Image 1 (cartoon, rainbow, N blue to C red):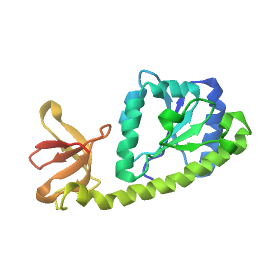
Image 2 (image 1 turned 45 degrees about the horizontal axis):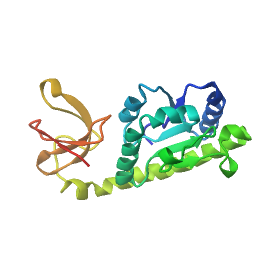
Image 3 (image 1 turned 180 degrees about the vertical axis):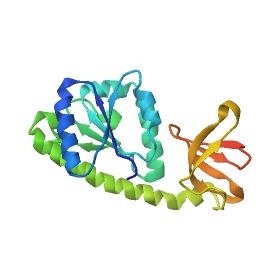
Image 4 (image 1 turned 60 degrees about the horizontal axis):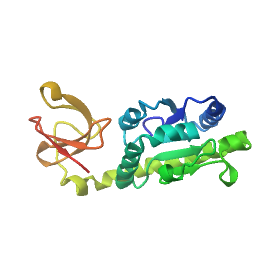
Length: 217
């Protein structure tokens, strides 16, 4: 995986012990996630800025669920787009404390302690180790899903071509106030580039003349 997973968590003291312990167990498995604290007024922006290929871990308690529920539309759209492209949502929900997670997070991979008990409700050390191993296993599946998705690009965007840039290169697009950058994920015929723009769920079709057509999936 090119980038470390992201762990989203609520600023709640009752979750801090589970978060720290899970982080340590992941570290022993060579997984070093980045931590992002959820805020009610910024969670939507944080979710939208996550690259589609990046694995997300949600530390789920009633506090984080209240925040996520306020941005349920964004989360649902993210899961749908990822599943369409990769066959998996790439989102892992770790049950930290009891809460009504089922409606919002049922499409994610649910990790918990033995018998579905939240990790902070039982033998927390053993539960965090078990969850860390599940996360590591899912990461391998996620990597394979991302690699396998590339074979469908020709069917999705048309015949491949050759241009001055290749897949993986960073390219500028637009003019004036609309200038931006993105990563080339596919080169079409006639030098048209399919560019992924971070923080967006659409791909940009960029020509050498900077003529942009936005193609929604």
